[in-house]
Image 1: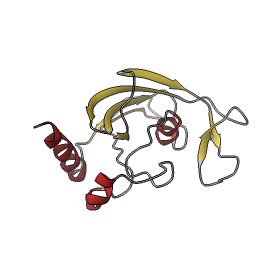
Image 2: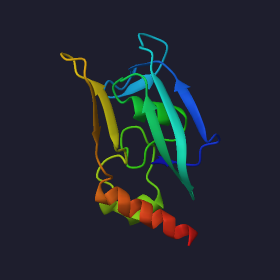
Image 3: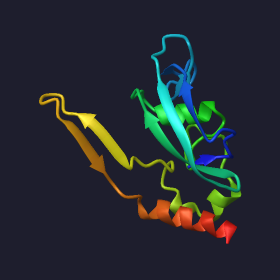
Image 4: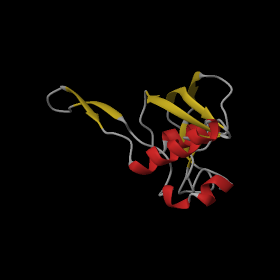
Length: 140
C-alpha cells in the first residue's frame, strides 16, 4: 500500500540502486556505484490518497520496493525510513501500522542445490485486512 494515486495502472521502474550517498542506513536510486534494479507494478485498488499495488521483482536489491516506490513519489504506508510524513489516517489508526504496509503474498524461488522451483504463499496479515476494510468503507 502506497501514498497517493499512481498515474498509470501498471508500469515498470528500471532504476539502479546503491547505498544512499549521505544516509548510510538507506538505499537510493543513483547511477554511482549502483546495481541494476527492476520492479513491475500494477494497481489493484485506488483509495482516497492511497493505492494498493501488486509488485513483481526481477531483481532483489536491498530495500528495492521501498526505494523504487519512494523514487516514484509513492512511499509505502508506515515506512518511517523512506516516507516523509504520516497522514491523519495513519495517526488515527496507528495500531494497524507496525512497520511498512508491505507483504509478500507469494515468493517463487529456485532451490540453490536442486534447481527445483519452489513457491510459497501466505495470506494477508490481519492488520492489512483491517486496513483494506477501513479504506473500502470510504466507498460505501
